Each structure stands twice: as structure tokens, then as C-alpha cells.
Amino acid sequence: MAQKITIKLAEREYVLKADTEEKEEIIRMAATVINKRLSDFSASFPGKSAQDLISFVAINECVGRLSMQRRLEAVQAEADKLLDDTLSYLGNIEKK
Image 1 (cartoon, helix red, strand yellow):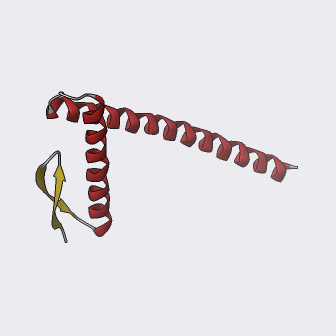
Image 2 (cartoon, rainbow, N blue to C red; image 1 turned 180 degrees about the vertical axis):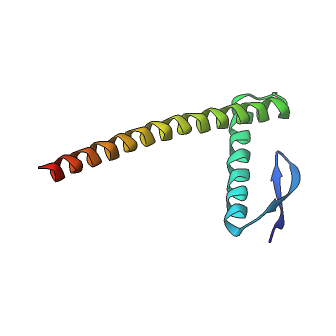
């Protein structure tokens, strides 16, 4: 059952729904990471608007996510090749 939770981002509160305890934990962790990044960018770029800081956080998080996605795809391709090589090897053993 979905549960309403409240998180705070950049001094604003948001009510969200979490379908599971795990999702609630992840949402709360995400809010913590976002707020930490906002704080870091605020210190690095004093005088920037909240919208600018949120934009910096968004682009950095998206770049990180897309980088991880590319790495995951490369690892999956390597795993698929290893599986194919293993199956081919085992098939050749059976033919002997």
C-alpha cells in the first residue's frame, strides 16, 4: 500500500508516495544526496539562485546516471560474450 512521505528539498517540503519501505528509503536517501549537492554548489557558487543550483545538481546527477548506464551496458555486453564463449567451449567439448 502506498504511503505518503514528506521530504525537504532546498527548504521546500514535498509530499510523495512510496509504494514500499525500500522505495521510501531510496527517496529519503535521494533527498539527502540532493540537499548535500545543493549545499556544495551553494558554497562553490555563492550568489547563484536556487534554480541555478538545482540545475547544477540535476545535470551532475544525470551525467552520473548516464555514465553508470553506459558502464552497465558495457559490463552486460562483456558478460554476454563470456557466456557465448563458455557455451561454445562446452559445445566443442561435447563434440569430442
